[in-house]
Image (cartoon, rainbow, N blue to C red; front, side):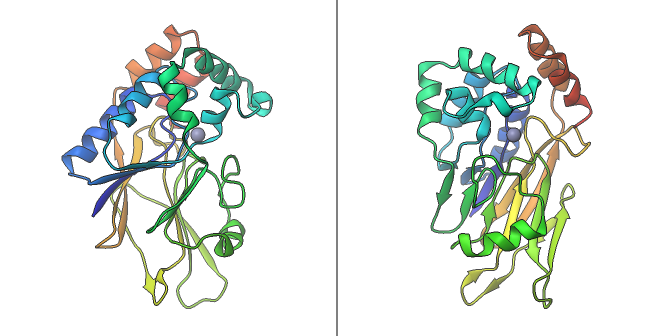
Length: 251
Ligand code: ZN
């Protein structure tokens, strides 16, 4: 079965629309969303409405989702993120609030595990190091582990035949990661599809991934979308200009 994997939409409906069209063109049968649906961008309700229309969607919440609900303290957010999250909190419709409030920070599925951050701190720890991968080994029962939060398309896995060594790899557009398997199922691997609505790897295109659980492949795909329109709406909403400017640089 083919899944569309995505994360960190951040209220960017232009980018999300492009990604969902791509998933539909590829006839995905299910969706995996690693959180931070809102925050930063100008269309939180529209993005949540688009997710509610997806069949067979598994989603966790991220730190921005919880902060927009007022459940997580946004005092430690940088000033741009905080301004946007306070604005987002005022925009959320009752239906959007209800949808976000029903999401949990971690999902342990039959065939995978998903968190926004890391298994030990699912909401707001960046998963960036080989050490964090090793620390996650005892905390995850079903692999692959899908993650988000860093806005980087990246993969962590143990290096074949080298005990204890972990390879973090930045994932290139269109390249397949082939998952390994042993007697206990899929071998430990953490996969981040990158960010739909605010990529930070110096590639401004929307990032998402296709996961094929039969071929056991994970492929990051980058898609051009109407960045100018997303920027104009951020500026029109009175959100910090930096949040609009960064979209065209992918950082
Ligand atoms: Zn995020």
